[in-house]
Length: 377
Image (cartoon, rainbow, N blue to C red; front, side, top):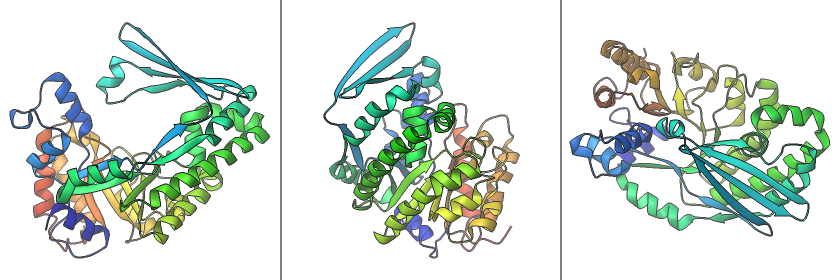
């Protein structure tokens, strides 16, 4: 089977020759390129070429399905650089006033694979709501289907794309417009204004969903980075699940695989993720990084939800022994018996201090211990 054939068969619950292996490892790869420490055999290659050289399945993560374009608004960017820190201030001048955000990039963030952080968001107080709503309502969702097809051609039979369907409306406000902590203050102090803001974001996100499900990509990733304590069950039930159900129903209607990014502590949210209707949970992160094993998740989600991931990133680092790592991977394979509806990968990424040889060993174990059907562990 090609990597794509094996991955698709696994997703559909069909017989596979062995557990597929398709990791995410650009964090390590990009760091090695910057530091000049790539193995000789991989030098001069891009990530996809290097993945082929290693013999692994390509995880075409966050493939571009759309791009946002702000209309009817004057957008000005100002960049300040000092001591290696790059600050970008973006101002949005609207008929309702001007709002701004501050994006910061530091050498430390780059070293850890973080492209930057939003330090200041558009919503700082009640005076910012009308202008921010204007920006949201005047942001066009432009399909990027040609770019998507080009990326799919680059991957070919060596892997599978995961289309980027963005974040749910409430979570996107938290991440990009208000800030996590400030969201709870704004929700409590200005409920009417926040409700208007959320309604505008919901309408905009519905358009994103429409563009995504009308694309050619099979797997669509929506939302992720959930946390049992930062977005606890009562918040999740009220502000996340209803829109997730809309997304997953639209995906099912259009023959798409609805997917969410489960690299955080989901221990208190397993019921909510199930009730949302997601067909796949990607970047699944197991103990010792989270309290939730594949076996725990299967009890709540049932056997039909596809799990992509599993390997706790810390197990790829030298703090754990080779024997501990091997036991960890074998345990994951056993918990994923009979070996389909499962794609082995990283519980988000290979860290910059991770050992490449452990990724090689994980692939070997998928070929040996992961022969279908896997015995229940």
